[in-house]
Length: 111
Image 1 (spheres, one colour):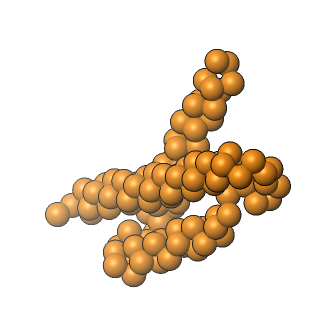
Image 2: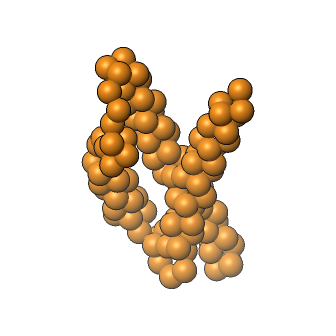
Image 3: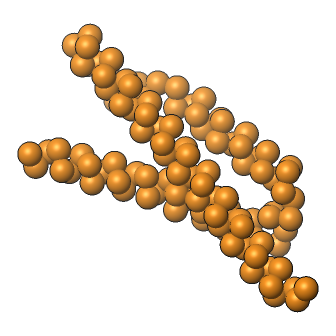
C-alpha cells in the first residue's frame, strides 16, 4: 500500500477514536452533573462551586487511563504527527458535548 494511504487511514482512525473518547468523557461528566444536581435539589443544600461535580478527578484519571490503553493497544496511532489527531479528537468530542450542554442551559434559562 502507498504510504500516503496508510497515513490517511491512520489519521482518520486516530481522529475517530479521539472523538469517541471525548464524547464518552462528556457523557460521563454530564451524567455526574445531573446526578449531583438532583441530589442538591433533594437535600435543598447549596454545594460550593468547587464541589459541583464530585468525582471529576477520578473521571479525568479514567480518561488518562483510556488514552494510555489506546496508546498501548494501537501504537501506530501515536507515531509522528498522528498522535496530535487523537488529542484534537478528544477536544472536538468533549467540546461538542460541552457546547450541547451550554445550549441546553441557555434554552432552560430563556423559559
